[in-house]
Amino acid sequence: MSVFVLVSGPFTDGSIWSAVAGRLRESGAEAHPVTLSRRPEADLETHVEELVRLIDSLAPPGESVLVGHDYAIHPVLGAADRRPERVARVVHLDAGMPQDGDTALALVPDPSVHDLLRAEGRPGPVPPPEPTQWQRWGSTEGLSTRQLELLSRQAAPQPPHTLTQPLRLTGAAAAVPTTGILCTAGGTTVELVEALVRTGPPQFRRLADPKVGFFELATGHWPMLSRPDELAEVLLRAAADEGRRLTVSEGESRSLRPFLLDAPERQRVRNGRVDLHLPEADGKTGEARGPWPAVLFVHGGPVPPDLVPAPRDSPFYLGYARCTAGLGAVGAVVEHRLHGITDYARAADDVAEAVELLRADPRVDGQRIALWIFSGAGLLAADWITAPPPWLRCLALTYPILAPLPGWGAVGPRFGPVGALHATDGTPPPLVLTRAGLETPQIAATVREFVTAARETKAPVEIIDVPHGRHGFETDEPTDEARDAVSRAVRTVLAHLERPV
Image 1 (cartoon, rainbow, N blue to C red):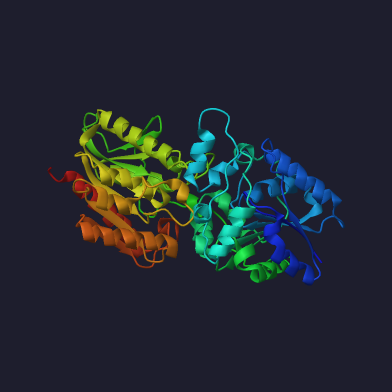
Image 2 (cartoon, rainbow, N blue to C red):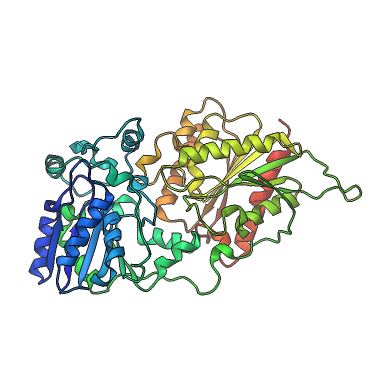
């Protein structure tokens, strides 16, 4: 039978696994709940070394299943990277997928922790949550008031450097089988992961590797307390190499497929973070005939900083920008830095800077600008809804996320387009919303909330539906429905640019 090493998230210790460890031992497996060092000077490296020593002490080698919950996936991956030959499987229990160089802080959903650790001076330990504050760290569905109170009583401060020290990986554990256990009350489901594999950056295709399996638990972020029997059963099944596998089509990555509309190449000018695709010059003189109106395309996210190709170089955004230029407006794409859910403020600054750069370009009519925002960047629309400038003629949103998803507490209240509709002092710019009929439920719920708020506030919104389209439908096999939707959206946005004030 397998040997389970159970490592919990911040503030908690090995006692949180008591019920699960008991069930595993009853099945004949070994279970080793871990309490990581709580010394104030401890850092991520401290915790990695503690796990390596434990793994080295276990026999037989190669049978250990390392279970990392929340923050603990960082030291678990660090230990597996150093002892891959002794690890049978790594289990991500409602945890992220950190890469080399990532810090745990990037995935901390509580914004107050970011403020604390970024304050001037030497940060002290992060205090554990009060009973009513645990929901800042994840869904508390399934936990009673008594359990929340017990969590707080048994919790200890988290050493600050465990959250801020980068994880260092060599890739040695890349061949170790992996299981993801998703707690669906937090909003993450296998369906959502599938959408990420299908439409996201090529790096996510590794989630479709046969060595990667998935399970769902219909509970909140602490299943070892809310569903110990179910969690123990799932861990045993994971050790037996069960779990749902994801598949993607062979061949070229969907993100590299040609754009679904004919979009001939146009003159392209790079200026900092912004690429401008220009309409055709005068046929006789060869000179620009501008100034032209412009559409600034804001790519989705979060995306890794080393994404290849970068969004503005991908066929997807090149296609949108070239189509726009072909119809007589500048198609611009901004390379913003939305690399994690804590980066929305930085990304918003990048977009604002790009807009000013675009408006200052002599080839652009600075009084006729549209913003076109995609997917996870949809939250950036809030600023432009709350205080719309007079030159913003249109705000287009394509399969956007329009409210922070469950577990995205670190985003903060500023980036809530639904609330922005109610908070705006004036009338928002005309809104063009493209909806995917087969959208993932979590994202679709935010869109429905936004549409309801738009109706209540009488915001001017035009909806373009793609009934058979999924999130990122432009990168699926092209259909007449998808082509018509994109063509209609482009022409609708440009029509708003041509209307007089």
